[in-house]
Amino acid sequence: MGLIVKADSSFKSFKDLIDYARQNPKKVTYGTNGVNTAQHLIMELICKKSNIEMTHIPFKGTNESQIAILGGHIMCAVGDFTYSLIESGMLNFSSSFGRRNLQNILRSHPKGLCYEFWEPGFFNVSGPKGMPEGIVEKLEEAFAKAMKEPAFIKAMKELHVPIRYRNSKELKDYAVYNYEYWGKFLKERG
Image (cartoon, rainbow, N blue to C red; front, side, top):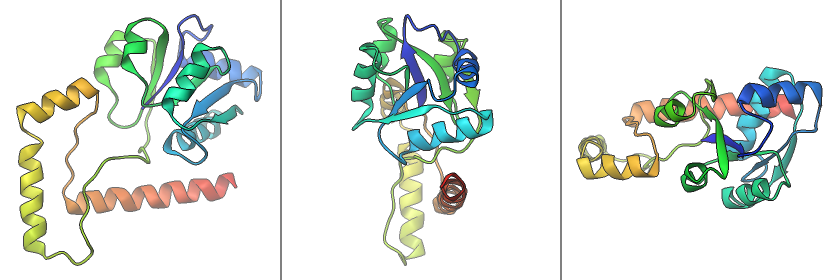
């Protein structure tokens, strides 16, 4: 997940955007996949941590917000951006968010800055409550093995999706942490 701007934007780095927002409260417009989505929460957290105010423009998806950037209707967007628009030079990657930043993009776009926090969105596989431990162990073993397969690794690399395996306990801890962290944050933000 990251933040993108139009290629000819005056924001040449994430710091530029934050500095502008600090000097121009509520004038930075940013698009997300909707109210209280992971993208929206991340930007709200950045605003809080940076002591700035930006104007949120919710869309139905990343594609809509990217079109709005290209049309000059918003200044930036957060989401799972389209790499072909970055590679073509139409959009610029400004920042990656999360504990596991997209190192390949950061190397090619060194001007990006990274904020460290746990992302509220992740892909996982779940089963019914009370699933027998033996079945859980077999599934964990199968998924751990599958995630090491070269074809899977290649596909995830092509999709620019970082691979992180968590067993059932680690996933539960991660989900509980996110629920508590973001729940507290939402209450604080009203």
